[in-house]
Length: 329
Ligand code: UT7
Image 1 (cartoon, rainbow, N blue to C red):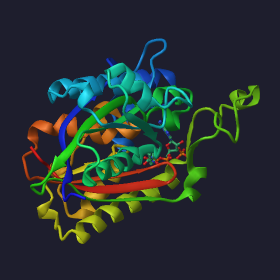
Image 2 (cartoon, protein in one colour):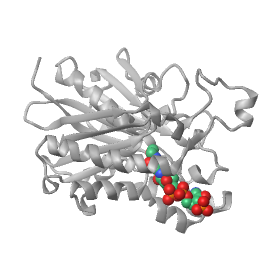
Image 3 (spheres, rainbow, N blue to C red):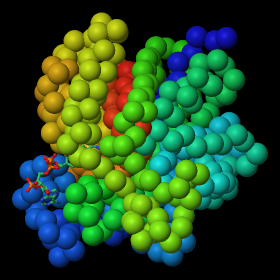
Image 4 (cartoon, rainbow, N blue to C red):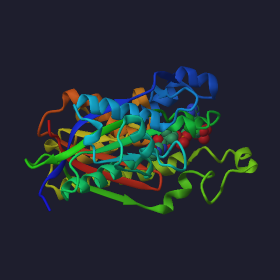
C-alpha cells in the first residue's frame, strides 16, 4: 500500500463540429429559444455527424489529444475506463474500442454505466488503482453520443442533450494533491423517471419497440428535476462538511451540466458564488458523462495548483455523486 492520491495531471476534450442551435430546433419541434434558454440555460449543442461514428470516435479523439498534450506514450498507460450511456455496441465495450483507436494495447479497459454520474463513478474507480499502487497511469474518459438516442420529434428531451467527450489522466501524487475524497450513490427506484426502455435484455428490439419509440430517452423532467436539485445539493454539502470546507474554501464547483437552475441551487446550498461555478451548458447542452471533463477542459487555463474543486453530478438510475479534488498543476 502507498499513501499516494490520484491526481489529474492532464485533461482534453472533443466536441463535434456540427452546432445545433435553438433556432434550428424551433424548425424541428414546437419550441423556442426563450423557453429553452430560460428553463435550461442552453443555447446550442454539438452533434456528431457521419456514418459509423459512435461515442468511441469522440472518446478516442479526446484520448489522443490527452496523450499528445501530456507527452505520454500509449504504452505507458496501465488502464482506461470509459463512462458512457451510449456505447457504440452492447459489446464489446467502448473502452476497448477507444484503446484500439488510440493505439493503447494490452491493457485493461472497461465501461462504466452510471448515466450522467458516470464520469464521477469512473474517476472514483480509477483512483483506487492509483491509491493502492497497482497502476501509475490511468485514463478516465466520459463520452456520449446522446443524439443517437434522442427523439428529435419530442420537444421535452431533444432540446436538452448534445454529443461530446472528455478525458483525464490520473497519476500518483505524494504531495497532497489529487482526488482527496468522493461519494457515489444510487437509487434504482428512479428508473421510471429517466430511461431508455428498449434495446436491452428486458425489451430486446422488435418492430413493436421501434413503433412505440422505446429506443429513445424518456424523461419525466419535473420528477428528475426535484431529485436532482436535492441530491446534488445535499451530496455536495456533505462532502464539504466531511472535509471541513466552507464556501470560501472552494475555488470551483464543477457541476454536471443538465440544467442551469439545478446548478444554481447546488451552488447556493454550498455557499459558492456563481462566479466560481464552471458553466458550459449554453454551448454544449447535456453531454451526459462528458459534462464534467469538458468543463475541466474549458476552464483549465483558469485553474491554479492547490485549488479546491468540488465535482458533482446527478443522473439516470438514479445515480449521483461528488468528488473533492485538490488541483495538481
Ligand atoms: O442529466 C440527467 C438529469 N436530468 C436532469 O437533471 C433534468 C431535470 N429536469 C429539467 O431540467 C427540467 O424539468 C426540464 C428542463 C426538462 C423541463 O423544465 P420544467 O420547467 O420542469 O418544464 P415542465 O416539464 O414543467 O414543462 C412546462 C411546460 C409544459 O407545458 P404546459 O403543460 O405547462 O402547457 C411543457 O409541455 O413547458 C412545455 N414544454 C416546452 N415548451 C417549449 C416542455 N418542453 C418544451 C420545449 N419548448 N422544448
